[in-house]
Image (cartoon, rainbow over all chains, first blue to last red; front, side, top):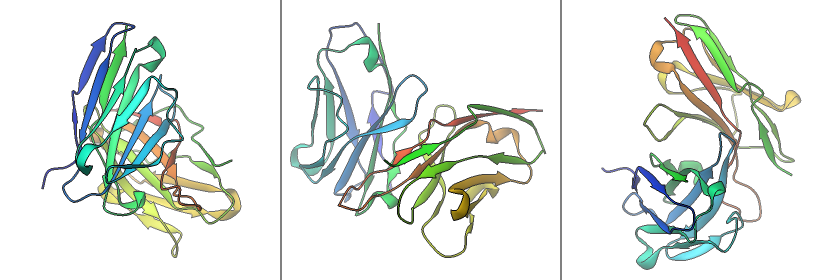
Length: 113
Length: 115
């Protein structure tokens, strides 16, 4: 069974550009989470989907970030326009029920120059 | 507010030596505690987790962790480190009451292993 898959693995963009990160959860997992690690700091929660609904988006840093999960399958996280401080590693995770059983993807390393 | 502190940013040990990575948490109720590892080029992998019961938890790859409520700690240990254990280790706590189905992570400890 495939795990959580994230695309791309690396992305380098210029400040002001738009980037879209994608996460494919494990099949059958209704819960999908986005986390981010910036500048070697702690991994921080961004948001949580249950199917296609945003259950908790308290960690989204500002309105330049837009997350979607159309159809309750894969999810995208768009950053528009990207700023230098958005650089970091973005992790996606999925679980059937609780986050205590979540599986994480390999992350997308975003570099904004 | 809930938080996780990993006091050591970097640790270097010799192969075959014992290892202890520290983790302290701040949480009002009985916590669920986790240790994750991120090896180079890999995603976050769960090493072990504590929910209740025996305070000494065994995990994968020969790791164990001990929950000490009085010290608000959940330190990770391994009796003999292998070169392949070089990675970054994250302690986490969660989820939380009120339907907040999320984890709070520490800043990580990067482990280097000398041959």
